Image 1 (cartoon, rainbow, N blue to C red):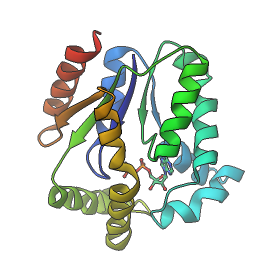
Image 2 (cartoon, protein in one colour; image 1 turned 180 degrees about the horizontal axis):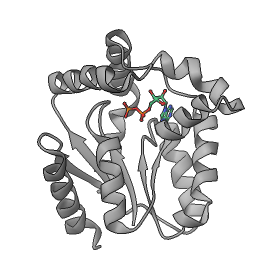
Image 3 (cartoon, protein in one colour; image 1 turned 30 degrees about the vertical axis):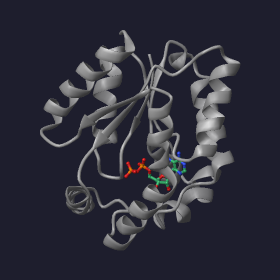
Image 4 (cartoon, rainbow, N blue to C red; image 1 turned 45 degrees about the vertical axis):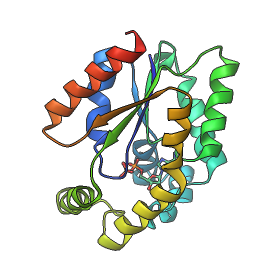
Amino acid sequence: MRLIIMGAPGAGKGTQAPGIAAHYGIPAISTGDIFRSNVKQKTELGLQVEAIMAAGDYVPDELTEQIVADRLDQDDAAPGFLLDGFPRTLHQVAALDDYLAAHDHQLDAVLSLTVDSEALIQRLLKRAQLEGRADDTEETIRHRMEVYERDTEPLLDHYRDRGLLVEVDGDGQVAEVAERAVAALDGVAGA
Ligand code: ADP
């Protein structure tokens, strides 16, 4: 299974991705987690992306695409993967398509978690209190929402046009949303 999970900041991608990936026996690959762990370990990559992330902006496409390609080259991603947080721009969509075509693979589905925008802000502010993420201040949250709407939301139409989009209501208990997601994916991806 080769899957993407999409949704606005706070829609629950990072919460749902590991469970869904485990269900299909594939790794969940989160670009946000990769970047955050590099920032924490103060690697060269971490130093490069720290300020960008803290401002709620996107890391440059080429850099992000290289990180993802390196990760997808690892053995555990050979049978499939669930990408969380990538692609986020049409440039990244094209890079992923090129990568998959070069390996004779294709996407099975793009899962979109939908949650209304007021609920999203509330979730993010709550997470800010619990986890203290540097990009979860109110101002940065608003900025991330704007960047998401401008750069990433158009990807939903793109994947819908390609017949890959599977939309699932992201409102409700974590387990309930997970069940919905797996049922919807089983319905379309022939898993
Ligand atoms: P959220 O789930 O709240 O949207 P993520 O953990 O996915 O946040 O990502 C956190 C930050 O990491 C983003 O705001 C961005 O700065 C950076 N980032 C993650 N994925 C990408 C990507 N595909 N392209 C560019 N920047 C990214």
